[in-house]
Length: 464
Image 1 (cartoon, rainbow, N blue to C red):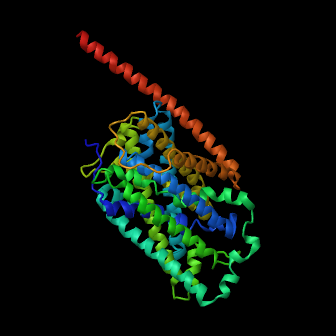
Image 2: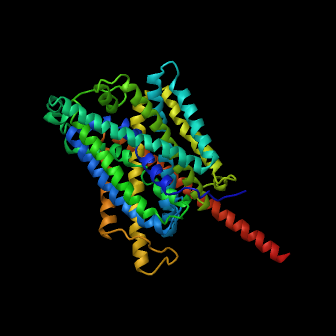
Image 3: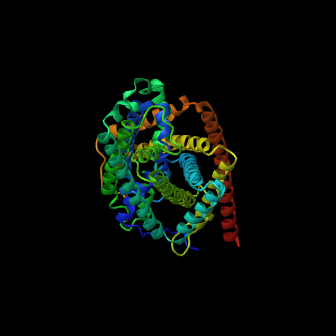
């Protein structure tokens, strides 16, 4: 049985998949939560800070992925750079779980929108159909995923540009719009002070997360990661501008206390007076949900494949089909992601916000690990180690760049503990880390028994 991935992603695929994986329901739907918590002034500040953290982290990833292109990305870097496999095991499984929750969050958001359009069908049915579709794409070929994601990402870019134009039309069409917007209402600037910005950071950072998928894509690139540096630089500029411009324009047109049924984006398009503009936007959100779910399934299944190859996950997940798809990893991930079916019993919006808050914090931990690996790798290279990994690109301002990235990501992680459900999330994380540590102990014991068993068998063979 084959155990290698297909390498059929070209530069166009890499760029569009990265954009598609980053711009999703976290921007189109999740932006309403920071507006309530951080306020009209705090939200652009939070998105700017998150954008800076993303910039620093991606520069670190650029150096790592160009030198060590691998579908396991930073999980594999931890395995290579640190002697103890504990950190690779712990971070790998936490990150895989965060991607699974991302799929659940995107499925929940997409099913909410579809249910709003066609209320006669339950959210559970929509979730099942979406899972079936994205699984079919990933079980076919990686090239099919690349082409579908290119189409979805193009639609997202067009939508954001249309949104920015709509905001400008609203502002210049009626100048009084600014005076009535949330940015002009002092009470909505920072309703919860600095704590509000900290509490919203994980949700805001979640919107940017997915950009690190470029490190995973390097393992299936046709040029074996040689173009990673160029792609990451272009990606940083586009994503940063899209998010910052979008949030800045929104607070200048969105009135304080406004309650959008699905998303502030829907509200803005409805204000344009175009017939069915809100319905059109909801269809866009649906397609974005398809795209984000598909990218999350790609990243999580490749991570599971990488962990299997690094012997910290069952060997079953390293098996691939004739076209290079890790089919067991895809199916297992999709099965676990079906937790989103709980939206039939829990209020979908509350489930969605809880999922992205939890996922956002693990994503910050992933970014922290990328910066840590970058620091460790460059120091090792300066000491003459790892000659098999040439430095095609050197991130600037070393060592301050990875150190600052680690500090800012740590602040973002702590920030969520000040949110409304922060204590509950902290306790859940402690329980999860404890369970994974126990699993690691059993995994080590199993591996030790396997080694002893193999040595005994070899010794018996020699005697005979």
